[in-house]
Length: 279
Ligand code: PAF
Image (tube, rainbow, N blue to C red; front, side, top):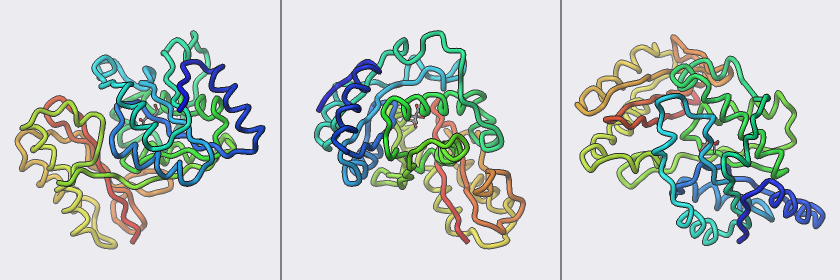
C-alpha cells in the first residue's frame, strides 16, 4: 500500500491508474479507524479496482470549543488496518497541504439547517468543502460514507447532484459494538462508566423502532425516546428529531419515510445515532 502526504503525489498515482482504465473508490475518514470504517473500506475494495482512504482531521469542520485538538489520532494503526483490508493508497495530508489561505468554500442550505447543522454552525460547510476537494484530488468513481452520520450522507448526495460531481455516493449501514453502541472514533473519549451510560442511545433507537407506526405524532415518538435517555443520569440530550428524507425538515406526523436522529452528550462527549423509517 502506498502513502501520500501531498496532493501532487495522489494526482500522479491517480493519473497512472486512470490511464490503465482502473476504477477508484474513495473512503474519506478523519482517521482513528474502527470497524465502521473497516466496513466501508471492505465494500470499496469489493466494488473498485483501486481504493484510496483519506485520513485527515479536517480543521474547518470543527467549531470553536469543539474537539479538534483532542480528536484521537493513530496513523500507524490506521495504515495497518488499511493495508490489511486491501486499500491501495492512504492519503494523510497536513492541514497546510489542504488549505493555503483559501477564499473558496462549498456551502449547503436547507439540508444543513436542522439536526447537527443547527447545533454545529459551519460544520457542514467544512465537510462539503473538504469532501469536494477530495473528490477533485482523487477523481474517484465511487465514495463511501456511513449511515451513522445520516445528515452528512444526505448532504453529500445532494451536493453531488447539485454540483454535478461525476461520482457515485455509496451509503453503508451503521456498524455497532456487540452491545449495540454505534462505532465512532469519539467512543474512545468515554470512561468505563460513561461507556456503559452511552448504551442509552441504542436503547432509545431500539425503543423508537419498536413503537414507530405510520401517522403517529412525531412528538409521541420523541417523548418515548427522550424518556429512555433521561433514565440515564450521565446523559444530556442535544436533540432528538424526526425529519423527512427530502429536505430533512421536522415532521409533525410520521406520514412519510422519516429519519429519526439524535445527538446526546455523555459527560463531555457528544454521540449521535439514528434510524430510518420507510413506512
Ligand atoms: O465523516 C467523517 O469522518 C468526516 O466528516 C469526513 C467525511 C471524512 C470529512 O472530513
